[in-house]
Image 1 (cartoon, helix red, strand yellow):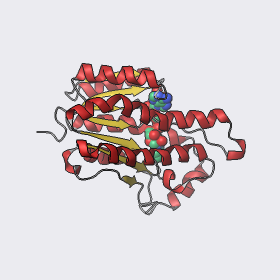
Image 2 (tube, protein in one colour):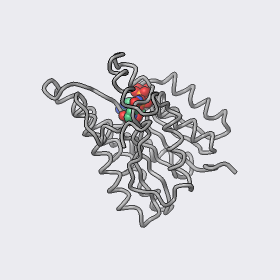
Image 3 (spheres, helix red, strand yellow):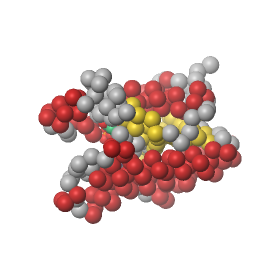
Image 4 (spheres, protein in one colour):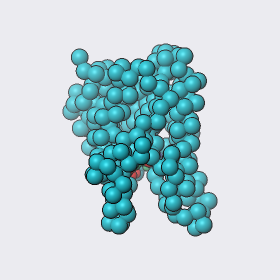
Length: 248
Ligand code: NDP
């Protein structure tokens, strides 16, 4: 029997990068996977096929994670279509970097709404089902900068710090009902999000990583599978780094 056999997972933002890695890894361990994307329809369709080929049920949903009502509709459909919900991975995220002095209101709001309000949206939609089942694992993809802060990323760091506070509150509110909630905080992971960094910026990041390499989506997905599974039933309310030792 596979580790996540017959579990139902929802992953936001899985058309590429870390979310895609997580969706595939959950499926390899036997979970059925519903996932969202914003624009990458062709990629999402290909991933849906890739997931189905692993022998699990899979469904892609186009969405704006920041939209409360849309999220309710999607999560309701996931529960109806898949017959339950066991694993919730809040991964969808964006950056709109700038120094505070130059950051406009739109860049602030967009990042906070996509990265932080989106978690509220999903948890509000999923909560009733998880409570009914008296089980569930919620995993929020945060960032090391949520703990450290980062120049040029005030909006992003604030969204991830907020996510960590939300994680701990959910863990405290829902723990007695068998529902766990943890944050995973990646460091520097090779995806389209980090492709925009200059060579100089990448060099600086790598100098500060004891393991001397960037991480991969697989590195993050491995921890997500562990937190989704019964291997971690006594772990909740934690923020766990996957960062090659960059932050201790
Ligand atoms: P990518 O930019 O590679 O992928 C982002 C994913 O989120 C895509 O699937 C995208 O969909 C989706 N998405 C973006 N906005 C929305 C939205 N409004 N509604 C629904 N889906 C949306 O990012 P990564 O894979 O690098 O990052 C994934 C998560 O990991 C993020 O939360 C990020 O903050 C976090 N993280 C990443 C790090 C890194 O080094 N890469 C480090 C620390 C944390 P579409 O393709 O359709 O646009």
